Image (cartoon, rainbow, N blue to C red; front, side, top):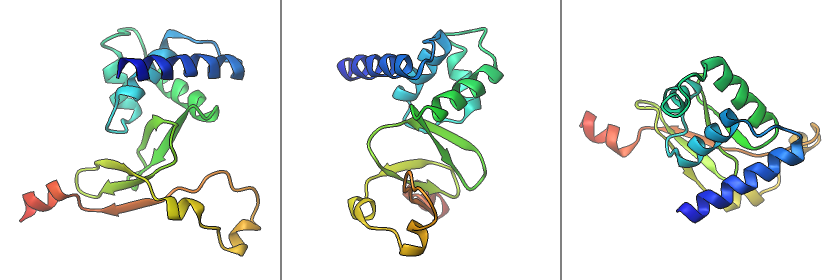
Length: 147
């Protein structure tokens, strides 16, 4: 785990340098927190977590940092039905399952979808950069609690 973390942080440092971005403590800690996160946190959740290590970091700084990292393709923004942006480290191509009750997000891979060509009318729209599927439903935990 520590080896993977060190590798990812080194890759992040190189990517920042290549993009002409300064490697600020805020950027490094935001990325580190996203590497550790399993829950696709919101900006507000990240802010609470980061304040433990960076007590003076503002919510505005977290928002700006996230925006910069998304703009440079270093992290992904996951849009939810509730219009709350959630964030994750950019990595292996995957899709998302989102529980309508508790908001839990789970990653899943779907190679068939990734390899499938888009319909002609969509392909001619312009330059497609990414395909992403979001599936909504009720997770097992919520189903058990409502039974």
